[in-house]
Image (tube, rainbow, N blue to C red; front, side):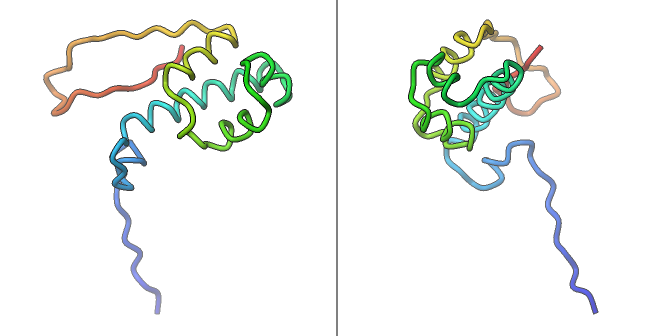
Length: 109
C-alpha cells in the first residue's frame, strides 16, 4: 500500500510559502544573487577574482553564492551588479487591476 502524498501549490515565493516574515525582500535578494552568480560565471571569474572586483573577501563571495543572504542589503547587491558591468533600473508602475496584491520582482533582460 502506498501513502498519499500531499502536494501544495507554490505561491511563487518559496520564502512566503515557508512563512518567513521578510519573504518579499528575501525573494528579491535571491533573484539579485542569481544574476550576480550568472555574471560571475559568464566572465569565468574565480571566487577570488570576483571578490577583488566587488571589494569583498573570498569567504563572503562563497557565502553569497551559497545563498547566505543575511549579510547583504539590496543596495549592496545593486553595487555588486554595477561592478560586474550591469545597470540596475528600478521602475514603479501601476498595479494591474487583475492582481489582488501589488508585487515587487526582479526582471532581467
